[in-house]
Length: 161
Image (cartoon, rainbow, N blue to C red; front, side):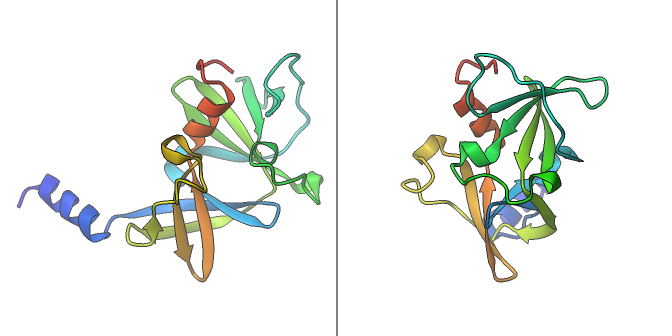
């Protein structure tokens, strides 16, 4: 059996494992594939950008790179943080730039199997172009895995934030 055939068999049987980083917005639990996370930073004040999308808080430059900050709580319509001084930025890099997703807390990292990942109901999460790639029931909790590239595309369909 070739390595590709073994990989396909693992995927079909749900044996593929991945790591997700769990985070909260309000009282809801979400996840992102760890491979998409560049780093995690404490939320800092940003420079607001005039006439930007309502979900873009602004920009900041923690080191040598300007990063666009997206307010994920506002985008998902989940309300403001109870303790904004403890908020976190999840820093990601996609083909068109670096983004900081403003979340409330980071819970930890879990390894999940493909069998645990269920496709979300398209009615709930916006159809084919929705913001969720899956729902995971892990250790007695439901985690919504978000599609961060889809969120960026939803904020700026023409590809430039």
